[in-house]
Structure formats: structure tokens, C-alpha cells
Length: 241
Ligand code: F6R
Image (cartoon, rainbow, N blue to C red; front, side, top):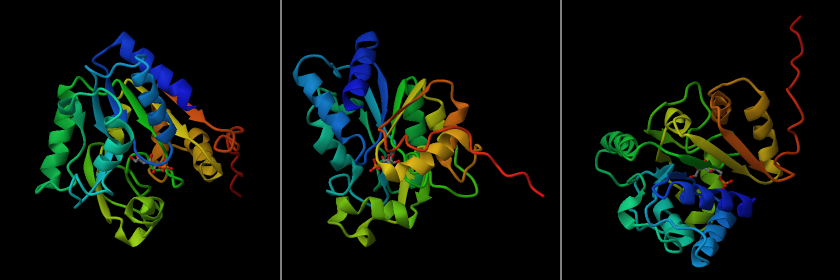
């Protein structure tokens, strides 16, 4: 998975050196980032004119905090590829005015020409970025409350203690994601199988934010056998009596 997606990215960079990439954090892209580092070292990927926009960041954390997504990205990708620092963008979780920070981020994405290639992971509850399941989704970059299961899934960044994971975050919106020209979603592991099936075959609903990807015309899912295990076909609903 990592090799094929890394090669797709390297090809996209060759076709458009000023490529604008949207990036996730989490466990899923770790092998991909390792492979991108390897391709860069081998002279097969060139990020020197590319730009990146990360999907999300914890609220109330300084960028240098070891649990921040900025630190994660520095550790796993930015220090291993030749991106120019001024073309790397992450939401500032420590911004004095988070709402202004969100507006500023939307504007920066627009001014960069929009996202060419958006990489995504998916939460077991169907979230993309930090767009959590609920009665509605936000179209644009916004401030959001994290579900306890999302905080638990991020505990490894905070010494294994999920209570230390911030309760809130900033995240690009579902509309921001859907405006990307191409989307690649990666998922591995049995715990993702149910949400993958609901994303692909279920109704488009804010209860499964990833289901909005059905509205996009250029999405590729890259799944391992366990994450793809229950993608068998549309779920049949029992007729109501
Ligand atoms: C994080 C992000 C999240 C993760 C998702 C899956 O930047 O966008 O939506 O992609 O929580 O996380 P992992 O890969 O750890 O299962």
C-alpha cells in the first residue's frame, strides 16, 4: 500500500512540481511517510516546489509540544523530505483566535490553488480529518470537540494516557476535503472494516462523515485485506412493516 501510494505521489510531483498535498497524521500513513523519505533519498521524489496542508491539529497545544500533529509531521515526514518550510501548512492549535485561524487556513488553501491530492485516513467511527460523527458536518475549517474514542486512539502521542489528549481540535471541513481534485483514503486493520463498508455502501450521512466521499468523482480507496473484508456490496435494508 505504502509503496504504490508513494509512487503515485512521486509521479504526481513529476507531473506538477508545485503539487499541493493534503496530509493526515495517525498510524496509517507511517509506512507511506517512510517510503516517501526513501524515495526522496533515492532522488525519485522531489518536494522542493510542493506545498502541504495538514488536515487537523489539537487545540491548546504549542506547535513544539511532542503530542502536536506538527511534531508528528516533523518526526515522520518533514525532516526526511525536501519540502520548503514556508510551503508547509498546519493549523495553529495555539492560535489566540481559533476562528480567525480557521478562516486564515481556508484562505491559504485557496491562495495555493486548492488541494491537488488529498490523502486521508479514517477513524473507526467514520471520521475524516477531525470531522466527527454527529447530527451535522461542517463544510469549512472549524473548531471541533473530539469523541472519547478519538482521544483514546491518539493516546500514544500523550504517553499512553488518553485523558491528556486535548478535548478539542481544529480541522478542515468536509467541504474543504471534497474540493480536492483527487482523494486517496488509506485504511488498514479489522477495526476499520465496518466503517469502510458504511462509507462505501451506506447512505451519505453526517453520522458517517467519510460517507460524503461518495459525492466526489475521483476517490481511490487503498485498503488492506482486513479493512476491506466487509466490502461485499450494498447493505440490504429490511423493508419496514
Ligand atoms: C489525523 C486524521 C484522522 C486519522 C484517523 C485514523 O490527521 O486525519 O482522521 O486519519 O483518525 O487514524 P489512524 O491512522 O491512527 O487509525
